[in-house]
Length: 243
Image (cartoon, rainbow, N blue to C red; front, side):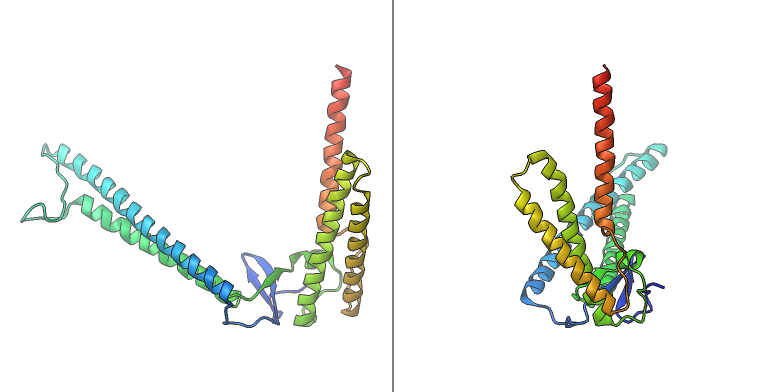
């Protein structure tokens, strides 16, 4: 069994599952979040204006090219049908192309805004969230019966333990290259990794969840890449020695 979208604190975003913070307030933005929202709005308006301008130019240009080809086929002279240039003005394909370009640009902007609004409603506006797919893939005994607050706490502790192990593995990989000057840093990283791992296992045990022995998947991937890299370096050095 694993945690699914049926869990009250879990939402599905782009095919992946996220747990939202049960302690966060919905609908009330902090001053920093308001500033980010205003900045995004200004950028969206600038992007929308630029997109509409480009749509007018491109649509009008394509329409003018089509109008010119039609006029040439009829043996007529071609001129742009700009508004106000002729008392008996009739819009041509250049104007029609510009209008269609604006309509298409507005449609794209509205669709993009609707998508962002829908994602914002899923997140609760600004409610923090975390991916839980790594927990589903690695931990044993995790299911929808885990309380919302416990699932959020477990996701935070899992992220902290994974980050500590990743830093330890990365630091250990560079230790062989720089010698023993950073031995104390590696020892400190080992202590932090062990401490966060022990806290994760204790918390998971209280929830009836088991953390398998060995490095967490993120650290396992780094170790596997390191083994592959050393193997490639070894084969490269053997080839060079044989020359």
